[in-house]
Each structure stands twice: as C-alpha cells, then as structure tokens.
Length: 305
Image 1 (cartoon, rainbow, N blue to C red):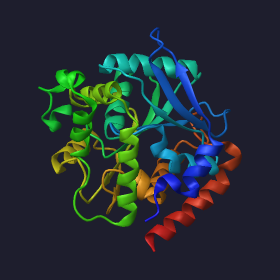
Image 2: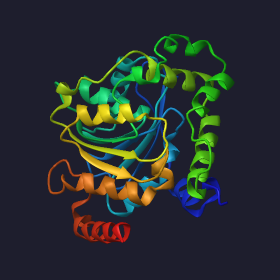
Image 3: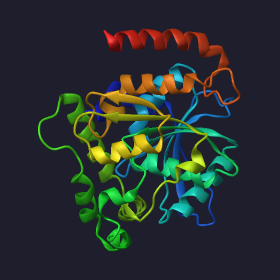
C-alpha cells in the first residue's frame, strides 16, 4: 500500500510550494500557516479550510491540480482561537493582510462550518463570494458535545486525539481510503494540545448558521453516500438550509474525499468556480480559461464513463 506521505505528488507539492507563516493578531503566538499557489494577479482566489484533524497539507491534491489549470489556491491552517467571533476577526485580518477583498471558500467539516460563520459574520460588508461545503454541518448540536465544549482545554492531547479518532471510519475500506485515513492520522499527530482543544471547542460550542444572512452567496454542497462522521439528519439539514445550492454527491469517499477521491472533488470545484469566469470574482487566470474548459469536459466524460 503506497502511503500518501511518500507519494511523488506529495513530495512534489512539498518541494515546490512554500509554506508561509503569517501573524495578523496582537498576540504573536497566533500564527496562520498557508500555502499560496497560482497567479498572484488573481484577487479572488479559492481558500481551503481543513477539518479538526487537518493541516494545510491535506488539500495538496487540490492545490496541485487547480493551480495547474490556472487557478490561485490558498490552503491554510488556523492558529489557536477559542471562539467563533475571534476566529472570524482573525480571518478577516488575514484577508486584509493578503489584500484580498472577496474570496471563494472550500471548507471540510469544521472548515465548512467556519466558512459559513465567516460569511455570516461579514454579511454587511461581504468578504465571501461563494462556498463549497464538503461533509460539513450548520449546527454544532448534532455532535451532542455542547456540554463538554468548555472543558476541552483541560484535557491532555492523547484524550483529545482519541475523541477525534473515534469519528474516523471503522471496518473495511478500499486502499485509497485507507491511505487517506493513515495520512490524516499522521496530520492529527502533528497538532499540539491547544490546537486540538481549540478546534474541538469551535466544533462543539453551541452555535448554528443563520442562513438568511448569507442567502446571496453561491453554494455547492459536496457529500458522500458511504460512511462518514456526519449523520443523514445533518446532511438533510444542510439541504434544507440551502435549497438553491448545487449538490455534488460521491458514491464513496468517507470523511476525506479530497484525499481519496481527489479527481472527482477537483472536478466539482472547477464546475462550481466556472460560473464566475469572466467576472471580477474569477479565481482563474483569464489566459487559462479555454484550456481549463476543455480539461473539465474531458474529466467529466471520463468520470461518467
């Protein structure tokens, strides 16, 4: 079984895309880590936000594929923030620092919830042009952990990791999904106690999305039909919340389809972003549009066949 960590694609990504560290808060312990690839002339890139267990590296296949087609892609990792307003304020400052007025956000699980909350938080002066929500949720009460959210900061790292690992797929999975789980376990091991505790706190403290504040944001919902940490009720709630959203379904992919079903996820991201081509909110270099259109059509056919 070939591990993602030693794959040529991952090694190419690590050797060609530099990891940047940026501080935007008064507290210099709050460091944003990010990969920023593709044409810097693009002022409305797509930004990827990871799940509780993820780091900026987990979207390396999206970074490689989408930049190859001419998109500007940023994959990031959050500093330690203990509440949603603090996160939103920090993320807004990061966009200001990067001189980005509006962005497209792809969020996986917790990343999707934070993306929705940021869009809601900035709705009076919008910073989010569109959302792609992958295996995500709109209400933290689905995890039945709101009563423990305030005590995560007290727990040792091994206990927090055990909580997160409890949501990973159990039982037989195909080799690509097994590789994806191994890679995410490795990423989880790289997070320290405060990083994990703060993310679990954001994931579980009592909060929900107010959809009327982000009704003008274009949304695509990506989810899987096989086993994932999200219940069917949570998925149905997302569909109800965004009745006009595009839906992209994957037969399989588990919790981490962006790793083990990357070709399909990349195609859905392209289809979502294509609606903004030719506008000031395009995430792609204008010179690359026609080549990318042909690539999408070819990929679409190969997935359908």
